[in-house]
Amino acid sequence: MAGRTPYGNPVPVSDLATKILDPVLRKRAGISIGLVQSWEEIAGPRLASRSRPEKIQWPRRLHEDDPFEPAVLVIACEGMAALHLQHETGEIINRVNAFLGFTAIGRIRIVQKPVTTDKGRPKPTFRPLTAAEQAKLSNTVGLIEDDGLRASLERLGATILGERKSKTP
Image (tube, rainbow, N blue to C red; front, side):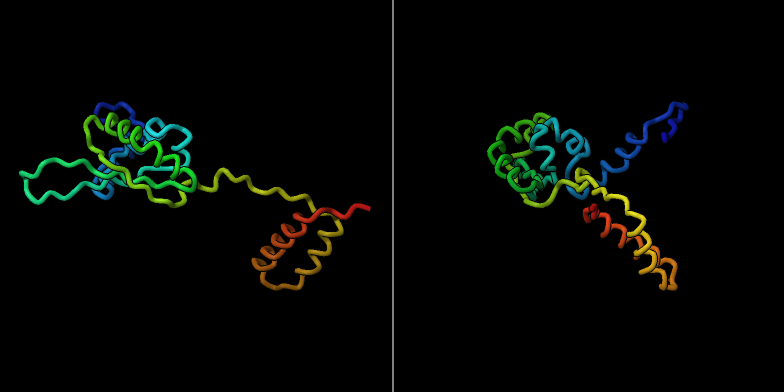
């Protein structure tokens, strides 16, 4: 899907989403979507897969005359990535500041929490049921009147029986 510009040229949906999300991220987390999208280039592939930038905490300025102070970049990471991240904080601060174009970040705060999703985990596969197992399962749940419940219990039974090794003589 793509939107259209006033001149009739199509615009990628990602550009439209960026225009919508960037102001929200800036307001809520003080972070730009460009930093989030470029995190793998900034942190490197090893750390980027186990961490993500959460927000930038800017220090409060009481007056307009107060001098500029760099912010704190909060990075969420999991497990041993926290130790690796801690050893590379200086390098990451330099890379983030180079990405932003000025000395915006002075410190990094590491927050340990789950970052990766379970999409890397493969779904288990089950063996097909034998005719005898299928017949036994159908007889067991056959007396249930509710069609939805019967179908659910039949799927559950097939999963449980499919996990077991077949009894071959």
